[in-house]
Image (cartoon, rainbow, N blue to C red):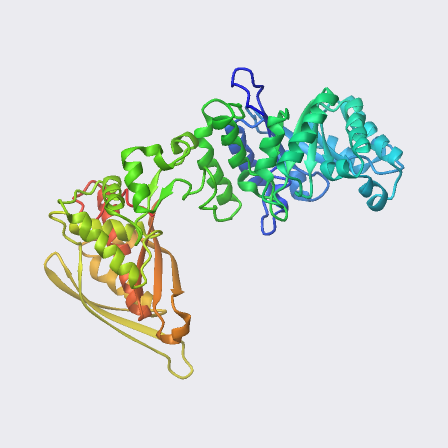
Length: 542
């Protein structure tokens, strides 16, 4: 099937269910305030619907709907989610249907059964009663002044079991007055070609807006959603970052840019696609989940290049190994320096960091990278250490400090807490400074001694925070003699950077990463204050 031209293609209405279906992901929990924060981000993107929650299921969702009444959404309509009435009672007597109306949300989305298996074996009711439950609940909500979207749960499974019954449930929702009928691949087991075929059949016969709600249990959630739109669906449900139960829901961060950039189908407000990466990462931050670095379009590594051949090519033509311009989705091209790198990788990073290298210096940097990675370093996630290696090869560079020596005493006395003392000599601006400090461990003591030695010359050092400290054993067979790699995340204000050290001695590996982190941090501090920068520039963040 050939995609339509942008001029002839209807807009695809995006229905975001991150705040309801997305929160069914294991380990994800959002407060009412979190939901409103994310809802505002989604509204800024220009989504058509925001499913805020399932009223009556928990107090947080009730609070979220109450808070939402005070928010002036620019593009999005808030939707409350629930089910058809229970068997044997009228919609007006069903408490959960009443809870939908109590939210005062302008849109109510209800789900009903499209599978005879579920009707007979799960609900234990007749097919006729199931059809009445759908039609009567939709009609009652419409008569109560609500826009109604009907989610046909297990539609694709139900279609395989009994196609006529599955279609009859859709007609019941349409008869009741639903403005959109959404075909749900609830178990996530359908494949793109069957989704495209069945959506096309429904679009042809239903005469109503048709939508798709896919899950990712076969890894086909995005493909199934795209297939449905190709077949005529104009209502798209999914979640930010693919959050959801089991393997997740269809990922809007992959579907939307593909529709807009490759199929010419408008989904968001004009210009909003360039904010997608920022919003995806913001949602992950609010959800307290690490962003997937390798996610299509919005991942930190989505446009990262490591192989020397690839980097050489993109330096000649940016799109040589990129399927779209990363700026279109708010991302950027990154060049990774590692043992697989070539000279082009180093030159590209030097340009990025605005470091002037003398002719041939890139070869020395590359040689240093490869030699160190052979000894256990890993520079892909420690770009501040790479920036320092480059700066040290640039003319006129002077480190803010140089180590003369350090000594650590660590132990424990009977009946007392463990202790660690560090003494250190460093050379600062031509003078040797000798200090000593205590810590709750060897690394803590080293850090305290270094800061103490630097404070007089660089008082800004006290604003540098050690955010994270990670140790990885590189050869478990060697036991306590194994090579270890230490990664340290540091920050100053909003700037954050990562440095690395490796050694068979965990203290030495820690010192190497710590010293790089402080050296880089001093450069950030001084550059931010407009002073002469003796270290590296602010751009070299990890």
